[in-house]
Image 1 (cartoon, one colour):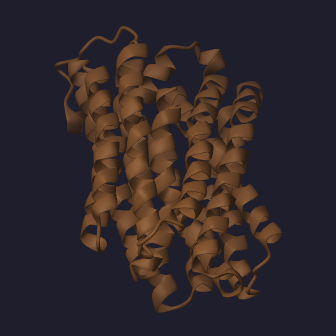
Image 2 (cartoon, rainbow, N blue to C red):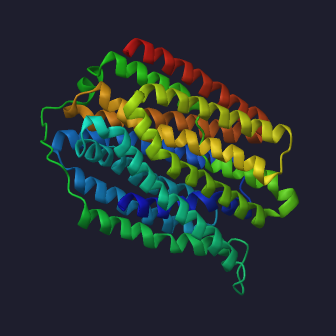
Amino acid sequence: MTSALGDFCYETTTVILPGFLAVLGLPAAALGLIEGIADAVASFTKMFSGFIADKLGHRKLLVLIGYGLTPVGQVCLALALGWPLLLLGRIVSWFGKGLRGPLRDAIVLQAVSPETRGRAFGFHRAADTVGGVLGPLLGVALLGWAQSLPGADAAGPFRWVLWLSVIPGALAVLAFLTLVRDPAHSPNPKLKFLSTLRGLPARFKRYLAAVGIFGIGDFSHSLLILAATQLLTASMGVVHAAQVAGLLYVWRNVVQVAASYPVGVLADRVGHLPVLVAGYVLGALTALLTAAAFWFAVDSVPLLAAVFFVAGLYVAVQEALESTVTAEMVTEDRLAICIGALGTVNGSAKFVSSAAVGVLWTAASPVVSFGTAALFMFLGTFALIGARRTTS
């Protein structure tokens, strides 16, 4: 319930942010840099939050603070007139996301048996993404309603949605405070940050390298929404195109909800790492299909829906299984910091990816930007296959 409400809050922003930037007159490079910097902040926060939790044992308080920062970031976005407050709002929200993510995952992992980790994470991610479906749906509906309000400028409808998104963010904090208990977790005061990182298993380091290479191409899906918005604007107009692009993102989330639990069950049966490899292939295919959509100037909603379908499948696999593969490779007393290391690698790579895709899009073309992303995602997939062979 907590994750669903949290996703309801910030996924509403994800779906309308590209359109908001468009009416503020900001280019694709600005969106890529904002999302990339926010991802980088979240990634480094994940590393240190995991270390602090393993050292001190205070996980629940840190998770509560993390959830509380998300609605604070939404307020900054709602007040923004240009890129500075947009950047600040995303940084605050993503700092909170980085603070809570590894600790929440560690709580989930220690609340279930190793034999059911895949389905537990699949169920959690499905519940998580329910908010990512309902929030954007309501956001798109409110965006249409707010256009009819008297005296509203072009940015007004977007601001209405951002203000209303603060409510589920506050409810997420309340839900975690009252409903979640942290399993027994003993502090480890002798834990040292650098020595712990150096002492990580070699196979886990190879796994992190593969995740990092893939992540260099794994761009923020805000850019996927912006791609759909631009491809549809000529035939629909910018506001209608933004609404349809938002609904396509909702469709991506619906696919993720439907696929997450079956992916977890499949991983528990055949192995988590092989299923993750298949998910990485789908990720590379998503970038390749997006590049092709620009090459052929696709403005067909069904064809774009197919791209978002593939994106939903790969995100379902990635989000359900990257942490469970980590849990298979490390000991429980270092679980939070290792999940934090995973998040740091992912976020650092996504900073490079989102910023590079946005800049290449503006400086060269979207075909070049998404084609480059696809290349790195394929390279990461091959590296993961190599890691699988060395860890089997």
